[in-house]
Length: 449
Image (cartoon, rainbow, N blue to C red):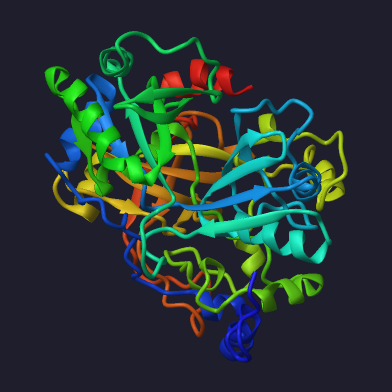
């Protein structure tokens, strides 16, 4: 990692703003958009329906950062900065990467794929990658790394890798057509190397929103050839190309909270880490907004236990935050749930029943006027005719069928009491499980175990 010039670090930005909240609170901020990929191809609602009723192609080549890590100490480094189990990590397997700070709260997750005994690729938003790279340098590990930033950050050049996700009830039929037959039997979240259009491709057994499918990964130089082959194989099946609007809604049903606030902003022992990050980094620019406001940034931190990542956590080795994470296991006070927003109330707030909503706002969830949780990810799911909010609520209110209220709107931030009555609209909501999608909640989750 390159140390930012004087005055340009995350710590400098926090000092200049007065606090992490004063730096990050940005009411009315529009959700981040997928770079390069069109927002819609045949319409976001039809694209949402494609991965549940037919077959869909999502192009994931542009919106994620990749860090390639190699060297004799690669496994030891990753083991010492994350809660994952590396004793049961096969070559070609991927895992949900779970790094935590000393307080046991998550930095940000990612997808970690083991490419060789001493080689890994970490993919996702940059925060977890920054965490790994910092400790690689400070800990004197014998490793090398390179990072290919997402296309909204990278100044020039192409991505390092292409990623195409094929999902839906007809996904395996499309794959068999494209490859001339079924691919080798592969465990969920494991991969096998194959060839398509004469190019080497990694086929990762995967799916989103509970649907069957594969993620195909390879050198970006082969992007056009591989994509054209998938599109040609999918044409007789009515393959639908998914745009950026629809793609960003699939996590709500599958129960994935994509951008938790990294637990790095106030711990004095992380001051040097904050100085290693640019004020223009993900950690310095990722906005907070919504009706839930607190002056304490720690009120936005979340635990892997709350996020439902227990299957990915191994306490059998020493890592940063292990003791705090272990202590928190039996003291989890919040549970991840899905809120079904009342249709009439949602229509009053958002307008048309089928209007697009996608928000990462942290909105207040109340019960009898008392704060009991916050939303993290809210979207319209057109095939269900529902607006859903993936949320954390106090465990006593996590029972399916419990009625709560969501306060929707923007708190102005500093200078206004966190619980001020701002006259914001309220919507009734029913608590339901997370993942909301039954297949994702049952069969899909059993594969993840």
